[in-house]
Length: 406
Image (cartoon, rainbow, N blue to C red; front, side, top):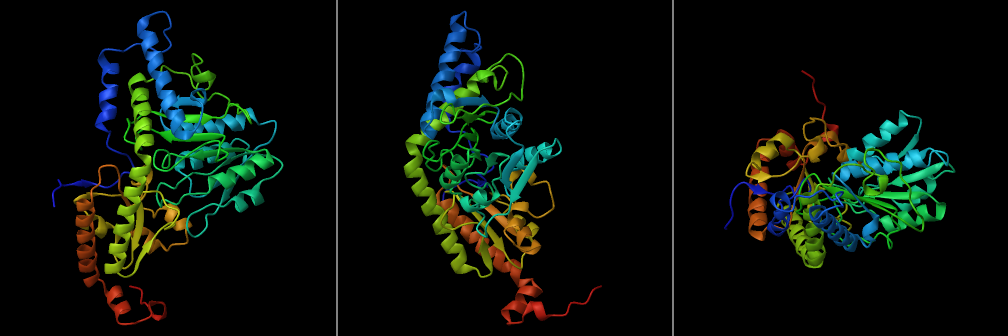
């Protein structure tokens, strides 16, 4: 086996920048440093052309017009702009928003802020596999509903939602549909027209581009979506998001989108094969392990497994040579079990022992084989020290055991 330690397997949190992206960005730091809003000289024209090219590349990846791409600092800002922007602009039409309980915090916290400011929000509980269905959305829509925000693919458990059907329900009801597609764009096919999407959030650093840059797709027709500005200033980005554009970052984002589109089919196939191989090997060699999220409708490279009768902290120690996650990166400082895993009806014990493995563009089969070896050996040794596991192996029903408090 040829690889260096530690091994990075947390690609749902962030990704290594592709060298091809970095090379395209380099001139815009030291040579082409103009402001895209400076339209009186060549430095500004070069910067503006670079931004236009990036918008074209982004648009091709998601099936949109370049003019429908609003550049932001990333998906968190895009989520805020989409949800707050719709809420304020369409306040006279209604004040009801629909989302799910397992959205990213950028969506959930924004919705909770709106609730404090007079808006009504319905939080839908997911199905057992972590999906939110079109039927749930249809049942929740009311006369005063103005927006539905449901993610394309979950960042923790990888479940992919049928956003095409959800979007169709919203379109029929005359309700705008926003999806946080941060985990899906560049990994699975996305087409905003075919999927009936009105607003879509994404980030560069999830697809081997730079951190601190992303975008928001805003539909221009059928229907035309209007947003109230959240950030005011010079009227940049069609007046929706003022601020001097991050030219090197935007160039990198555009290149990352171009590469993702070129390699999407082959990389999707490779990652699905790698993750299915990993799941099959682990589940064939260990008992009392559970896959969180859907096996079939799952993002490529995302695997979230709970290991029963083992402490989560102990698992992390076993996996000290690997960068993995025990929850989403944004909430990893919390000692509470993942709210996403808990929403699936998983017990606190299992939720605490859940680990997310994120395979990516640079993950090799040799690294996955080593991961399997370490997991199987490490979990087996930990369970040898677990009295609960020993009782289960002896056929004792733990639910019938009387526990004495000390």
